[in-house]
Amino acid sequence: MAIDGRRIFARLQSVLGLAVIFLLAVLFSPKSGAGDRIFLEAGNLTDILRQAAEIGVMALGMTLVILNAGIDLSVGSTLALAATVTAMVLTRWKTDLGQAGHIGLAVLAALAACAAVGAINGAAIVSLRIQPFIVTLATMIGIRGLARRLTDNTNIDLGFGQDVASTFAKTGSDKTLVVVIFATLAVVCAVILARTVFGRRVKAIGDNERAALYAGLPIRRTRIWVYTLCGLLSGVAGVLHAAQNHQGNPNAGISYELDAIAAAVIGGTSLMGGSGSIGGTVVGTLILGVLTNMLRLNNVDSNTELMLKAVIIIAAVWIQQIRISPLARRKT
Image 1 (spheres, rainbow, N blue to C red):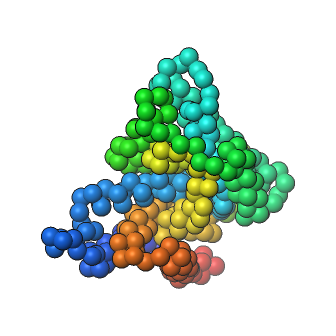
Image 2: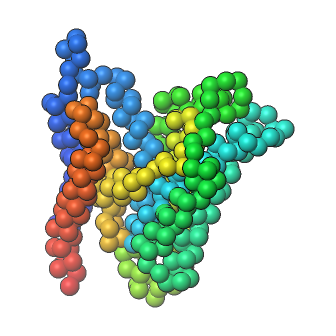
Image 3: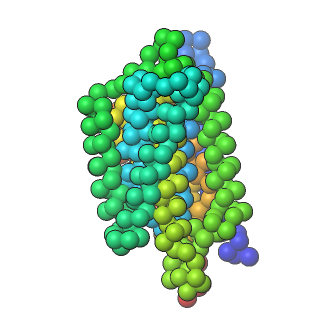
């Protein structure tokens, strides 16, 4: 019963954190000329959801990786690759597929490239037996260089004319679309983790790899698929980034890996693997979104914002250690 109580508390902890951050954002919100709190304005709340959703899609993939006792530092660079590939196909390739077909081709090309990046990460980790931190650090650097090479380190603008690129950009102007996509993907990932054999394997391997090996679980194949899915979800985030910002930017997504890790950890996913949930990551994403919005409304500079996020990650991991240590003692 005590263990169940701790698990319930762990799930409520992130929700309580969101409520506290939301309350602080309301209290410290600057006011408009009419005396209303800017934070509570409908447009601002919509912007929070829209901006958080992009990070949230990446955080879903990061959650899968961390649950499997891994880490992926390349998600920000992978996002940039997806954004640039999407923009390149839309602006430089000529097809007879019509606008919808051309957009579909661009999206598929971007997602395929990013899934390949994830598969390479997973294959290198399991085949070369190199730590995930080192492998994904290398791909973070290499994929960023590839994105810059493909575009000569310049942005590819999508414009607002009548061509296919402009049609894609106009689609990205729909503020609710990215939120709907994030919510849909979150539900899909939650179902995969909770209701499928693959999802149970992801957690089991992350919780105790040796026991999973003795149980005959396909550790190598599962791990490759986990990183492939993380790359794919980073690709989705990159396509959304290109649509919302109306350009393919090879320098997009810098430090986004920090946000993705933070969202997962704040939501209760243990960096030791095997413990966490998609629902927690969604809440963690919203906490980061509200916090970022609160800081920017109060004109806090971006460097201070990064430092605060680092402190939050350390605090979240520390709280996890306090929560986990009694369970570890109980097991021993």
